[in-house]
Image 1 (cartoon, rainbow, N blue to C red):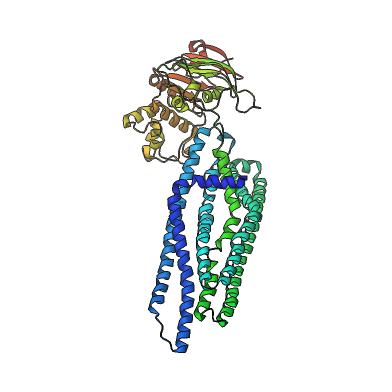
Image 2 (cartoon, rainbow, N blue to C red; image 1 turned 120 degrees about the vertical axis):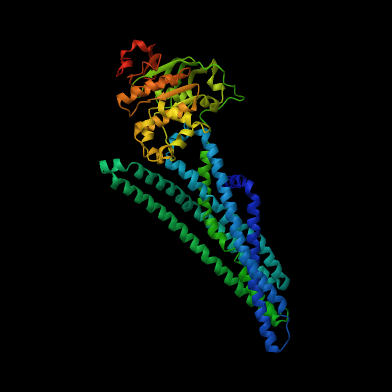
Length: 576
């Protein structure tokens, strides 16, 4: 089985939960198609029969065929309507389920495996590539099922009247329904894949243009990026034009085959008519039946020309879903111990094999209830300590323990549930202030929210908001300054009320006075918790931390009581 066949088979396996809806949609499509074929052929037979009966003065029962024609018309219209409802319901259910499936596969990969992909690329695979998979059911499986079921019925009915006509219809149907789609599939595989790839590249380039608009304007890079987008657009349009031309040629050949089948049926039927082997109204029935049979075949060449794009989208989805997590849980995992003493011993961490060490032999202790400031310049490895503690990235050497139990032996989710973190690059959700706070603790009372907001020195800011806690913060906290966003994150972490609190550059974006007030307000709130404050300045930390550890070049170089650093009550960075 080649790669494309394996992709197709795997994709069909993923669609298995919705096969009931899909089968119902296929059945309705078959019913409406057969009703359309019956309507055309029976109408032709009826008109011819009435004309002959009228010319010969012969009585004819027209009630039964007239009722059948009306029935076919109603069945075709109603069946087509129900088919659209059911097939689109099946498609939407399947796409929703596939998005949930992919998102569930992405969660264990973040951030170590997904960090190398841009946001636009992740969004493209989660949305656009999943959307591209709808083509498989709506445009391939449904027409294919209808053609496979309807064509034999048409051929059998024709053979009942005149087998040479049935044979001619079968040969032309195989040409239009098998050889032509096979040709369209193979010719459309490359341009179809290109349309998907270029569309993904265009989305990434557009995201870069929007996110970096200020820098592009500042350095005059608009023309360069515009030229790149224009080039990608031209490549995509070229691939699209190739695919459209292929579909147009294939689409034109199917009606040609249908006309040949109808003309051949007339020629063969005329000979049978002259020989007395066929009634005159039956000649009209056979010709129209041959013409109508190709209604079931017509969608196949165009559909299979697009199959290459669908399988390319599937390959992109599976490539992401099949990536193995950088950090895996032990099987079976150990429960977290009651004692919360954290200890790092000779911890080494780097983000790629060829990358330099971010941590190179870190030794650090954070006893339960103790508060440590981790001090150092940018690039010293302070934030990498947090990444290692949270088990977001694997450590290549060394050992981290919690209460004497190795973190590697515990479930990553359990470890992260014990640690509240204010990250250096905190994310504010496009929601209200209250929604952003309750994310940490959905059952928090109003008093608990107020206490956390006050400790984070955010109460004055909330009082000035037009709608208070219901104020919408915008995408990525667009309505907040950097310092305000940081304090929202601190309030959220305090509200989580976890035994270990990690503050990564908590006063970034705050003036010195606000920073000291924040530290003073935090001190009583963190009593009894283990606290790790990551910072590059000590100003005002004296009342919050017990110990100061100084990092340089991925190592802890010195560790001493906070009282040994006069800067802890003022500002500045001590010499390492």
